[in-house]
Image (cartoon, rainbow, N blue to C red):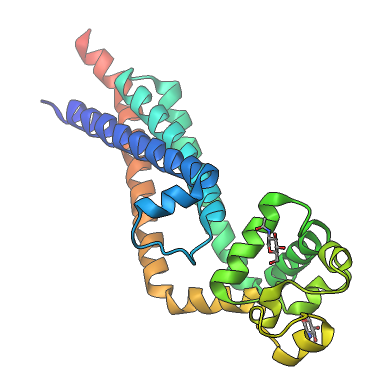
Length: 245
Ligand SMILES: *[C@@H]1O[C@H](CO)[C@@H](O)[C@H](O)[C@H]1NC(C)=O
Ligand SMILES: *[C@@H]1O[C@H](CO)[C@@H](O)[C@H](O)[C@H]1NC(C)=O
């Protein structure tokens, strides 16, 4: 088996695995979103108080779909020895790589700026859609319950919101750390001062920085390898046909 054939087989098998993994991930995500309760019963580590199944589900579906498509593209490109599919595969991964790098740089260099954009975006969604939009409400509910936080910055994010008005000037129970302090009005919410979800999330990220760094390094390595392999195949396709003739 020549080097070209070996690389080709590796690329086909690897992309087939990526494709299968993507399908499994997307299927699990769909199941989680549609029928979270029974999904949680199958996975023992997830206890009942872990309610983020919708957010995790949507995230899994997105990542799974991208992996499936990319895997299919790479697999077909290598198997059919198609220059256009290979270059498409290469370009998509290159774009993903550039986008990831750009996002990381922007997030690090302009972190306070990013934080303001994130705050404006999250807060307006919270004010207008919390209690109205099922998915957004579910996402916030699970985040606030799991992380024991309230709003993006603090409870004032709910002041004057749709939920606040609908519930007779009350905040969601998590903003008063559960049902003990009832009713959860301005006075009680201010008194207990439940921390905002953004702060909690930043703390979780900081505590797991080494794990996240490891995942980022692993993903980057796979992307670079995939680009190198598809470029190798692309460049050697013409030559191989030439040799055959
Ligand atoms: C979210 O939490 C609020 C306050 O506890 C509750 O009224 C609402 O039904 C919950 N919504 C969803 C979709 O879980
Ligand atoms: C709530 O957060 C906003 C935005 O960061 C801040 O301006 C405000 O002072 C905070 N209020 C309380 C009561 O902590």
